[in-house]
Image (cartoon, rainbow, N blue to C red; front, side):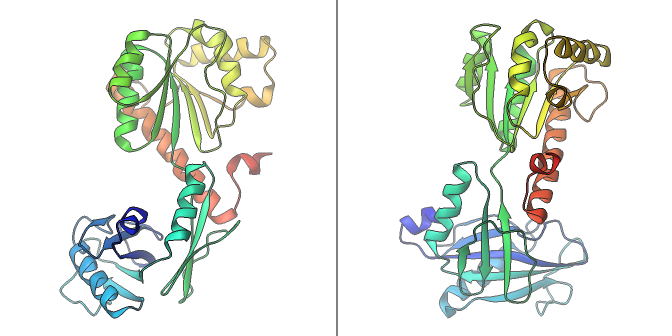
Length: 312
């Protein structure tokens, strides 16, 4: 929407504010439709998007926002959702560009943002919690994108970084292997070379980031893992068997790493119990990270604090 505003093209912001029965999308899901027909986002598998776009263009012409139901209970009897439920969509024409840019700037700075969405305006809300649709407005919270710092080398790191990037995560790959770094850089994946075993080339992280170690040998973990555990992240993990993880924990304790940091470390990571190839490992681990990130999002939206804050 910000880009269309720069072009002088008017837009409509459409927000899912209520669900009746089942829906493939959650409250707060959004579409943006430009006056020239361009659009981003969706509310179904393609069943209602054309109708939503047509309604948005009429909204621009009429100049006033409103709520329309699609699916069960809708006046549009020829439009049905595959799940059999219904959704209420809020159409907000010409939303305030400055508010949207402010929210984007906050997210770009790795800070959460919140918007109050109404029929006739969109405004940034400071330090807000998620507030449901009350017939007049919905307050929706947004959190920074999933960022993954992945350490390793060879096919395991390459397969995981490629899949995570395709998913849409912000991926930062760290490796001592020059060839691995070159392969990932060619895919436009951010990379950092680990020059020595004693120094982690990562100085900044946050509570919306995950740090994962994909080394099969523990020699790269001895000094790097304690440094990683001292950084904020919603997920710290390292691959390996249960025996390997027990030895890893013993080594961390012997080296004087605080117990509260050791307790953060996940071992035997991923949703698939046993993986034997890089592709399966990548799917297994990414699925777990996304599930954890979504849990973090849900907690942040409804409590106004991060999981890390709650644990302190």
